[in-house]
Length: 314
Image (cartoon, rainbow, N blue to C red; front, side, top):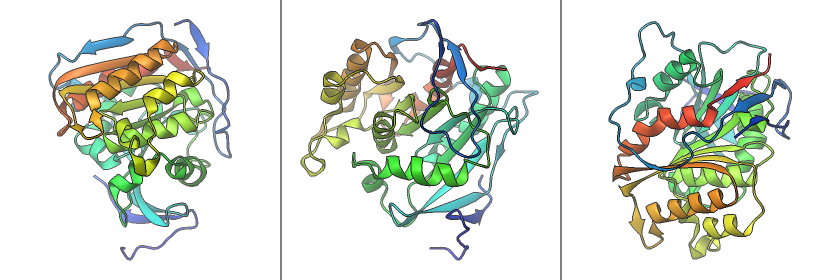
């Protein structure tokens, strides 16, 4: 543990960090300091379905000429009561974010990896400037500095969803940033283990999050005896439809172990969600699970698809 001091909100500053028109309803995520702006979307079906990734490194990885960069806060650490551990995080605000006006909220697991390998800041800057996504606030959360990444992300219990919705978002986002109260404007994103946990969050917190972007998401990691053999594909198939919009990526050489093939599991999850009538996309690339080059290359497209035809009401 470093020598920085816990703030009143559990934060410690650690220094600098590198189909038709739909109006989603107000969610239970409303809280002090949130904006009640609804996100109105006329998405259609463009991009839905399964496809192959055929592109190389996208131009959005580099800040385009004339685009103003958004801002990242100094890196800080949040002390979670649920975990009894510190979670490093930074907050991003797009250049077109205006205090008092509604913004989307993107919550990233493995936040540091998204900022480095996925070039998330430049991608968000470019897409915001182009009007491809609405004004955005991004919460980039790393695994606990005094804990274990896999043991934080793999268990399909209520700890991480509670940590997000009841602890860190109210403390570091609410009252500080004017994010929309509309669950249609909230997205969970994650890669591998953090993607598995992201799916756990979006399924268990439908009043808060209606959207999920999973990059080789380890949803199959929950289907082991120690976690009660939680089979997400079977749960989706046997449950009433959740109001979700889901983008998934996998690859020809995705992870395969005693729990199964990630490509097969994610394809089955895609099929199950599609059968329920959810807007869903699945992109399959030619590479492997790590490094997640296919997920990184598809990242800008996944965000465009998530918010295509969407804008906040004036």
